[in-house]
Length: 124
Ligand code: HEC
Image (tube, rainbow, N blue to C red; front, side):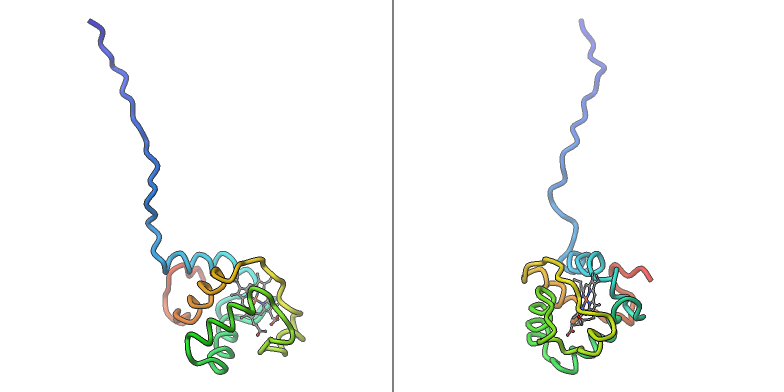
């Protein structure tokens, strides 16, 4: 009789993602924006605090905020900037090549997140 001691393990791919919608948006934001935009300090670009303050002043409602910011990030344009001083100081933000559904996710994440409190993805 042949004894088979070999055990075969199958490692299935886990296809169900454990990322929630907020984690996904946080990842998009922290992975793509923080290199230039620090949350609280200006370095090579204005801080997220400064950007959010300017945008909230101009667009207090979430829909307007997200509409305007997502369009702008998809195609930065001097003529539609609401932070002309920042362009003078740092030059126009480069186009990053995101489609609008991605930039909408990022803009809504920025609107919804209180950056002064602990939040998902925060590393500083
Ligand atoms: C390579 C550096 C760089 C990256 C990456 C970058 N930005 Fe910027 N961004 C800038 C600079 C510089 C400015 C200031 C000049 C300007 O307004 O164009 C700016 C300005 C902005 C503004 C102000 C727009 C206005 O009205 O002038 C918003 C909003 C913004 N960035 C959002 C984002 C978001 C969201 C991301 C991530 C998806 C991002 N940026 C990634 C460099 C960057």
